[in-house]
Image 1 (tube, rainbow over the protein chains, first blue to last red):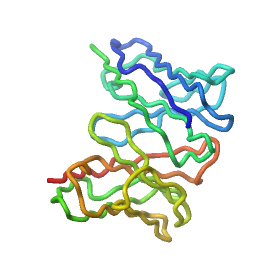
Image 2 (image 1 turned 90 degrees about the vertical axis):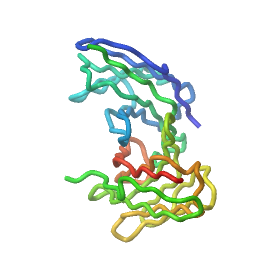
Image 3 (image 1 turned 120 degrees about the horizontal axis):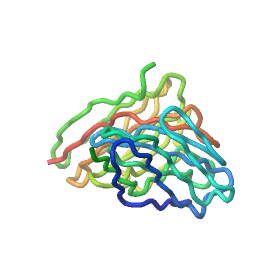
Image 4 (image 1 turned 120 degrees about the vertical axis):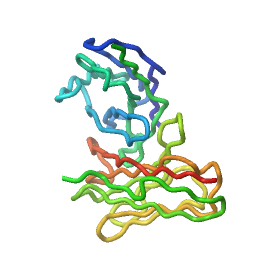
Length: 112
Length: 115
């Protein structure tokens, strides 16, 4: 099963750009990479999903190199409300994305 | 449009009791998955259902069971509750059962406390 490795925690200041890198050395050919944000006592919120190169939406960008063994979530100009746990996930390797494998996630603390 | 909705949001049960948690997926979504999240850890996969059939099961005891109804809503049942079952139970829905780029959306969860 494809597993992910992320930093346990990161600190940033309001207005800065934050980049969270995720390692997934065993990613399967048909796996997409998905990032979720979770606030305490709430369900994970979908942020962005990608397969290769770069994906951008209104809240974040996702950079995926050609070998797909890692990915970087970029949050532009973070605010205090971006303080949360961020999870990087890939599918279970069989293409069944109904089963997501969550790691410990990255706890991002944004300071004023 | 409504997102994934779960009920109840909070409940307290006694050891040995049974609990039923309910989930309504996003309109048009046919796949429902259940996850357990213990405090301080990431969610752990319990079940996935698609078109009323079980498509996947995580490493949970037989005390955990689920089903999906014709309207694609789902129930998670846990029998003989243990203190260790205290957790946030998350329901997630997606349009397809699997496949590249199949985005999965989560509800806000049901907090279960077993005393």
